[in-house]
Length: 410
Image 1 (cartoon, helix red, strand yellow):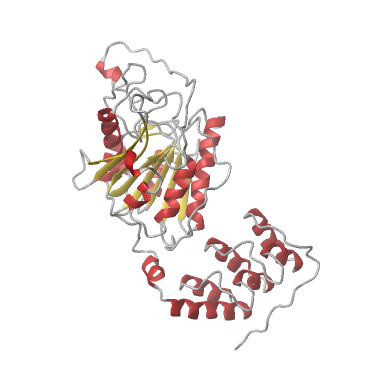
Image 2 (tube, rainbow, N blue to C red):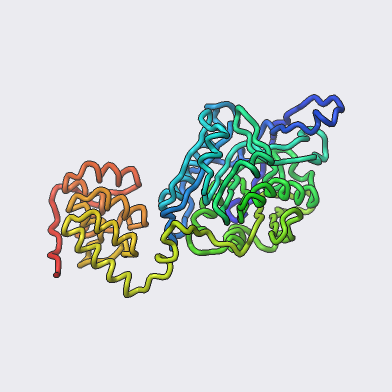
């Protein structure tokens, strides 16, 4: 993957199961003791993400974390934190997210939340059937491990009810991109194709058009962000890897779908760490979102809405300010050296400030030498200053003097 340079996973723990030679026992769903993403560091800093050109307003997502090493084990907490990083990417783009973390992650609740969902995220153990018999040929793979219960492929294909064209993204789950935690360098292409095909099939059967599987949280962040830039699903996948190391085939079990998987050399010990399945020409969209309006707005209309935004802020009209942003106003519009976020602070419009930040207003741009946080402190806007501090705003100068705002030109 683009963001991993020679990930080496030493001294992986081998999970021993006792098999009695019974095919029935051999085919029972099990998960490796070590999840494939465990030895990759958690998110230490956010990836450099592209700005959205498409709004997520009206879109729904479901974020799921399965138990990794107990409800509150250190690895489970790391997986929860990594998924929360992905949730933030979605919420920053206006997506409504239902979150399910151990122990509050029942399959019944996930099914209900998935109704008309556009995006499903899962981090946790992958599910297979053969953990200790090299060369680790799997009779079947697929589903979620939530801690209290396994969720099978059949339950997924019958229980999830997404909108047509939805996306599922697996993070750090064994088998989903090819390898499990301790068969790297052992399995080869045929087993990899089988695993990815089996894991993705129930999602494609139920209406999903994009299946992504990666081990790295920063890659997952970038995938989600790129989906909101009008890139198609295939271009998003290839942007995060070396195309020359990707195998492209027709999906064995889903007519009209493709299957891509990345092979990290050397050829003598290949690692399969990144996969896609589905419609590579698909684009994230929703009938309930204002995506088409936002992506097609003219520059002239954008400027008109920006003027409406500035005027509405001066009038302290929160509703009109928010509506102008929905209609395409530039959150970073310049008004005599001031940005809308600075003006919204002066006129004490916290909800407008929050919406501007969500729409990627520059959180550290200066007006009269003041960043938004310093401006909020100077004007004693407690709610706004606490919000900006939490979002990573910085101070630019001693905040003891209130700067004079420009007069509004009617």
